[in-house]
Amino acid sequence: MIKKSVTPQRPIPLLRKGGHETAESARTEGAMGTACIRTFGCQMNVHDSDRMRRMILDAGYAEVHSYEDADVVILNTCYVRENAVDRVRGHLGELVRLKREGRVKKVALTGCIGAAEESQELREQYGIDLVLGTHNTYELAEFVGLPTMRETFTPELPGTKGASSAFITIMTGCNYQCSYCIVPSVRGRMVCRPLENVVAEVERLVASGTSYVTLLGQTVDAWRDPSGDGKKFCDLLEQVAEVAPRVWFTTSHPSNMEDRTLRAIGEKPSIVKRLHLPVQSGSDRMLKIMHRGYKAERYRRKIEVFRENVPGGTLSTDIIVGHPGETAQDHEETLKLVGECGFDSAYVFKFSPRRGTEAADMGDEVPPEVAQRRFMQVLRAVERGAFERNQRKIGNLEDIYIRHGRSEGGKAVGETWSGHAVHVATDSPPGNYTRARIESAGPHVLYAGEPLA
Ligand code: SF4
Image (cartoon, rainbow, N blue to C red; front, side, top):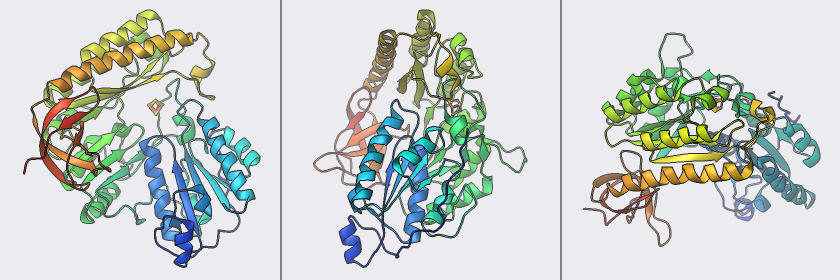
C-alpha cells in the first residue's frame, strides 16, 4: 500500500539565510524563502522533521513558525490518532486560503498520511505540491533545491549538532503485522542501519556537545546489523553506551527483547534505567487475535528480568482496550497484568479502526460505552500503582538531567537516572545535571526541592 511520491519538475528558487522568526525579519535580512514545518504524532515523526529541517536550512531556507510567514509549508503527519486525516484536512484548508492570497507558495505533505491511501485524494482536493511517504523523506531534498538524495538515512546532514539531546533512527519499518496497526503499510518492512554508521553519528553528535541520545525504531530491539555478521540490538546499544554520556531507546517489542539487553540496562552506567515495553493486552486470547507473537507469561518473565537487573528502574507500556472481540474476561486479565507488573506509566488507547488494517474489518466490535469504561479502569489502575510507587520516592536525592529549561515563572523539566520526569526549580540549561531531593509526587511527575549546591 506504499504510494509513490510525486516530485515536482523544478525545485523552488531560494536564497541562503539563517534562522528567522518571521518572513519579515527573514526578508529584511535579505532572505527570500521561508519554510514552516508542522509535526504531528510520535518521536519518529519528530525525528523525521528534524531531518527535513536540516534539509531546508541547508538549502538556504529560514525556518518560521506560522503558516502566514512561510513560502513553503511541510505538514509531517501521523495516522495513528483518531480523526488524524480530518485534523490534517483542517490545516490543508487553511493553506489553500493562504495560497490563494499569495502568501504560501508550496505545500508538502509527508509522514504516515503521505504514505496512506487517502493521500492521493488529499493531493487532488487541496492542490498539494509534493506528497512523500515515510520511506522516501529524502526526496524533499530535490524539492527544496538540494542535490538529489537516494538514501533513507542522511546522518551527514548538519542541523542537530550542538543540541543537548538528539534522536537517532537505527531502523525503519516493521516486520510484524499487528491486527490494528497501520505502520507496516505506511513504513514498509524493517530496514536496519549499519552499526558503524550509527556509532559514527553518535560520535559526531557527542563531539559537538550532545549529551543524550535516544535510539529510535518502530521495533528498535529487532535491529540486526545488515552486514549479516550476527550483531543484534544489544551489541549496538553497548557500543553506543561506550560513546554517549547518556542513552535511551524506544520502542521495543517483547518478542525481540533479549535478557542480555535487560541486564545491560542495569550494568552500563550511561544507559537510562527505563524500559518502555508495549504489552497491549494481558489476555493470551487477545494477544493471538492481535498477532502480537507472545503470551502474557513471556511478557511477565521479561519484566521479572528487568526488575531483578535494574532495581529502581522505570517501566512503561502501551495498552489497547476495546479491540474487536475483547471480552470482559480478557479485560480482567489486562487489569491483573497491570497490577502485577507495576507500570510507572502507560499509554492507554481505546481501539479505533484504521482503514487498511485487519482489525478494521473484524466485526465483533466492543460497544463504545463498554470500551470507555474499560479504558478508565485500566488508566486508573496504572495511575493508582504509579502514584503509590512515586510516593515512596519522596525523600530520595536524585541527579536530574535537565531536558527543558525553566519556563517563564515555572520550573525546569528534567528526568532522574531511571528516566522519571521531575520538575525542579533550577536555571540550569538543557543538557546539564542538577542534584535535588524529591519533595512530593503525583501519578505522573516527581517534584524536587531547591537544588543542592
Ligand atoms: S510491532 Fe508495533 S509497529 Fe509493528 S505492527 Fe505491531 S504495533 Fe505496529
